[in-house]
Image 1: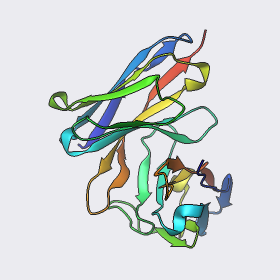
Image 2: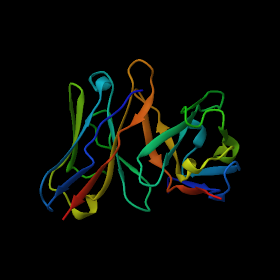
Image 3: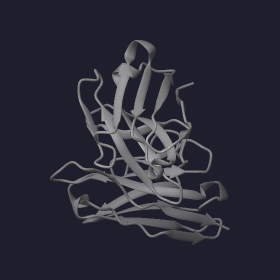
Length: 108
Length: 121
């Protein structure tokens, strides 16, 4: 079955740049999407179609994709950006819907 | 306010059943394809099920196929997940989410806060 691979954790100091990667064989053909989960809150879409930022998402959030890897970048991370980030995509042959394993971002 | 609100979670014994509901407000649910996603304790997000706008097409993850059934009542702006044959490893927070239509459909653009389901004897 199709898998998306993320690092389990990323830690930065406030104001630094956080980068979270997501690798998967089909990412060269399929878009990546990124979601932010904070305990007790509804998850939030922060990046869609690899690079697009929904309205209301701060400009410090950006996305990129090259080959089989997508990257979420938070430029000048804030304490409120802490939480778990998940990438999502689909398999190019089966359309299997898959989330990455998630990355815990710590900002302190 | 545009939001999704789940209800119906709780404690159930292995082999039992639960029915989750998800009410949309601030938007008309029949314009959107809908999904259920869960997060088990200590684990990541898992997509579970999809339902088309009219409800005539459903899709399921292998882990719940044959045990869970997704449905919708567009007149009541509500999505449902009937969960039968529950197992201990179905313990999780269950989220309803919508797909935003467009030139490219955006998956899971809006989420509820989740309903907690605990399967234990």
